[in-house]
Length: 251
Image 1 (cartoon, helix red, strand yellow):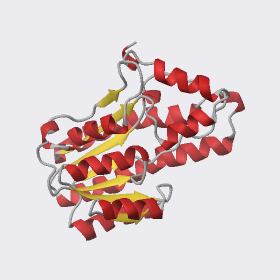
Image 2 (image 1 turned 135 degrees about the vertical axis):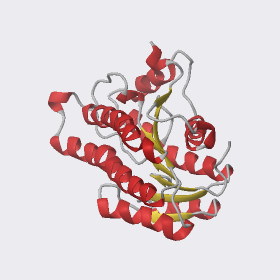
Image 3 (image 1 turned 180 degrees about the horizontal axis):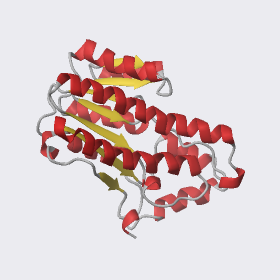
């Protein structure tokens, strides 16, 4: 893909799952990758494999996210691509049975953490005055209704519209903001979701059969979409959410 060689990319939640696949794909395309994650062992190992960098980051701490951006600039000399990927699924429960603790935890990581990433990445892009690309990881659960995960759906839907709003606001700086909305992908996060379901076997079967295209996408499918949105091939694409869902949201 055009324009990714030697670009500096910061990926939150980059040590495992989708984030890891995204980091690997951007590295394959020639980007300098910086992995921001709480998992030091996995993050350092991946950074070493990709000749990149690791910075321990708790996305619920605004100052830590700001420092991750500064770390990227210190190590790579700039920031060109920011992938807002860190997130959790939380506990499954009907809305009236949901705990306030779970609500606040999921919102804090999936929405507040994403806002901090946008805030500090955008500030750096504006300062550099050379454009930039942001890709927010959302979900099909942010595009249509899903039962029993109220804070997750709320956070992802909010981030879909925040993607649109910031794209409108920062287009004049040639900064592009898009989102990718996967259907269920078998990552550690989704495996946790399956395991915590009332009937894990039934949940897994449902996930494998709910899309018009049977089965689940692989992490590499999502990573390829992110790489495209970050590349110069997508230079006039901004404010959209790409559903990588086998047609699920078309139903």
